[in-house]
Image 1 (cartoon, rainbow, N blue to C red):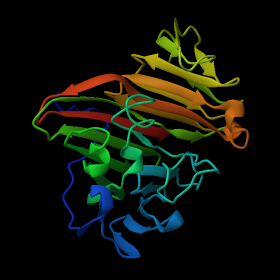
Image 2: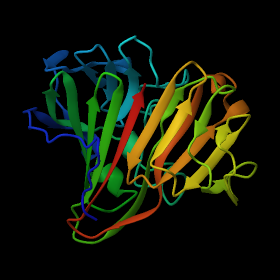
Image 3: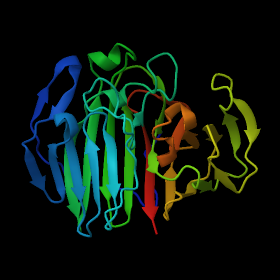
Image 4: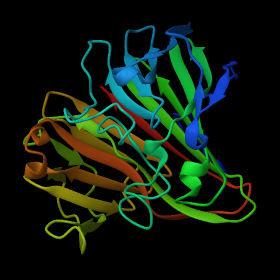
Length: 312
């Protein structure tokens, strides 16, 4: 599939030089100093001494991205309010994925032949390049196969993840390239946790979608059609919306309306665990852009999907 573009396409980036060092299991890092600063992009130590990238725009908005999992854990607009949510039980010791923010699901969404949601959220990404565009910082992370990934999925690939921060928006572009000599298939999603009042949150834009509802039985989803103009989170919610609209609107119940636009993420997922996470379910909802069906790539082919989150 050819790389696509859209009205909020991310800009072409100029490479910046960063020294790479190899770690166990074939993972690679960008080697960084305690405070490596450049043009609104800073690589520093985060929780658990894990390296994270901090993006700061000229308007005062800020985002944080952990290299472990390539996970965006914070998106603050200029008033300092964080619109993403990291669960209080999240750990930063690389023994499990970071629970919250925008974790990657690749090359598998949900359960399947490998570990839950694949391996991309359990691996170290490296910083490929960064750029400052008129006060808007941009960074591109890279993930490649190694012994850890090949033990589950024996293919060579490259994943590039570009994040651009603006005054009132954060945009991401994920490009998967088949660098193997044989075809492969995958599914993917951005498992976005939004700060919210679960009882007051709602989503518009899903009416008419075919649904695969995992309530009450996650192992046997019920097929249906969404008839509501406004979808709420009254209790346990785990529902896939196939061929979803390219623009959704989340009212987080905290006074904010977030517009969620995408290109090439064909599906959407709403999730809130309710009593399964008694300590924190009231404080977030997940609205995920996803590709539930398989993407098939021949050698040297690429697939690209973009997400744009903005607040009015």
